[in-house]
Every structure is written in structure tokens, then in C-alpha cells.
Amino acid sequence: MPEPRHLQVRAYAVALVTVAAATALGVVATPYASHADQAMVYLLAVVVAALGGRGPGLTAAVLSAAAFDFFFVEPIHTFAVTDRSFLITFAVMLAIGIAIGSLVQRVRAAEAESRDRALQARAEELRSTLLSSVSHDLRTPLAVITGMATSLRDDAVGAQREPLDTIVGEAQRLSRILTNLLSITKVETGAEPRREWVPLEELVGSALGRLEPELADHPVTVAVTDELAHVDPILFEQLLINLVENAAKHTPSGCAIEVRAAREGKTAIVEVLDRGPGLPPGPADQVFEKFFRASGKRDGGVGLGLAVCRAVALAHGGSIEAASRAGGGASFRVRFPDRGTPPDLDELARAS
Image 1: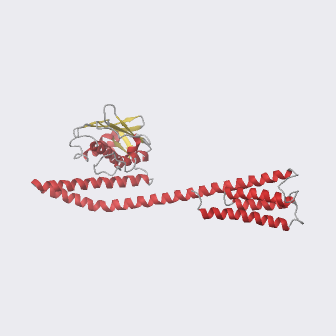
Image 2: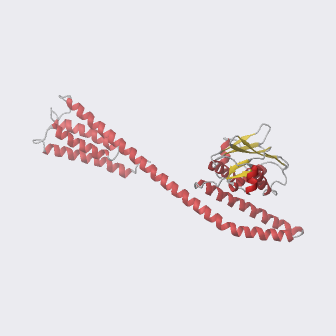
Image 3: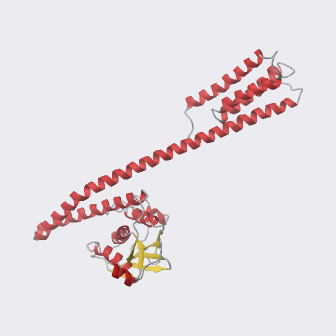
């Protein structure tokens, strides 16, 4: 970031003043000082001016060399140089002005960058704190609204059910948005996932069970091996819910959705595939950006679901990839590497 203009003007003014002061001092001390002493005074002026940056330092160096030559080097009051050894003095002045000015400029740039990073980190911390606080404060009243609306809907008959269905559906949607906000706040603030060894079947079954209304018009094919995943169960379930819900939102009614989960070596692999329109034009990973929504979509989402998926995968030291499928549709593949050795399934069952 360039310095304000008034600071630049002041730095150049300091360069002019220091060179003028060095010249005046040199003239006064001529009967008592050697050329070497006078040159050292100019070097001091160059150093002082260079503290204002590379431009002022270079300006002071050029003016100092010219003034030293004009006032003190034979023949006096000309820019001719009979003793070529003074050329080395001039070169040293220039080199010092450039070197110190460049160093000061780099230090200032580093300080400015450090301040910007600190401010950005502070802003991110405040944002995360605010989101977490608001989300937590809203969850309790939202749960009460959902519970009361569900109870009224179950007792309603005929046309009374339709508005209550809408209330319940919107309340559940808002609840998922708050859950996504809490999840992305948690992982982005550096919280370590609470990993457990959990059967893949249990994780997938729990996530799909919470999506029954959203999947009512979509046949779901599940292929899950009888193996374990070393993950945070809550975050994993949220990731899978988001992926499957995303597939249901962006595919026509009746389109099949596939969910696969298995292990490859020391890594758990989860895939969600559909036969919808595929990914939007552009880089595939753009769908994982916060608040990204496919052009023309009006599904009521805010564009956080897939961003949460990426944040959860990265928090586990894994990865997530999106791609369009041959013949139409999209696929999402998530990798969760293990930490440690999985226990025996029978031992896990006995422990639970």
C-alpha cells in the first residue's frame, strides 16, 4: 500500500534539508576537516534521508554527491573531477542510499502486511463469534416453533394442514441453515474434530433418516461397506446431509441419487452421485465457495451447504472433489484419512 502523499512530501523535504545541513556544516568546517570527514557528513545525511524510503534516500545520495563535488572537490564550484578516487565516494553514497531506502521500504511493507493480517484475523474472529452466538440463541426458539407447529399439523385436518406444513418445512430449513453456520464457524476457527471410530452404515443411515421428506420424490441407492470411519460423527453427518440435500435440490423429481461409502486402504471414501443437470459452467471447485449459488436457482438456500462440506473435509485432513458425470449429473467424492488403527468391529460393538 503506497504511503499518503503528505508523508512522501515530508520524506523528500527531509532529504533536501539534511543535504543542505551537511553542506553548510562542511563549508563551516572546511579549514578544520578533511575531504574524508566531509564525505562522512554527507553519508550521515544520506542515511537519515533513506529512513524515509528508497526514493528520498536515492535523492539525498544524488544531491550529496553533487554538492560534495561542487563545493569541496577540486576544481571548486564545478562538477569536474580531477581525482578519480572521489568517484568511489560518489558510488558509495548512491549504494548506501539505495540499500537503506530499499530495506526501509521492505520493512514498512512487511509491517503493513502484518497489521492487515492481524486486522483480518480479528475481524474473522469477531464474525465467527457473532455467527456462533446468534445461531445458538436462535436454535432454542426455533426448536419450540418447530415442535408446536408439528404438533398442530398432526392434529389438523383438511385445508388446515397446508399452512402448517409450510411452517414446519421453513422452520426445518432455517434449522439446517443455522446448523451449517455453526459447523462452518466451528471448523474455520480451528476447532479439532472429535474423531471416533464409527461404522459407515450407521453414519449414512442416520444422515439419510433425517432427509426423508427431501428424498420423498427421489429414489436413493445406497452402497455401504461394513467398515469403520475415523471421523467426527456430527460433522460427518452434516457433510453427508448437505451433499444429499444438494443433489435432491438440483435434480428433477424422480431422478435417482446414489450414496456410496467404503474404505480404500487407510482412507474412508464417501460419494454422492446424481443424474441431474450437472455442475454449472466454470471451475468445478467454485461450488464450494461460500454463498455460491448456481445461476437462476431459487431454492431458498444461502449457498453454505457445500462450503461446509469442504471445511469439514479439510478439518479432517481430507479432501472433496466435484465433477460432472458422463451422461449427465454430478458426483461428489470426499476422502477422510485415518488417524490411528481401526478397532475390531466386534470389540467396538461390545464397547458400545
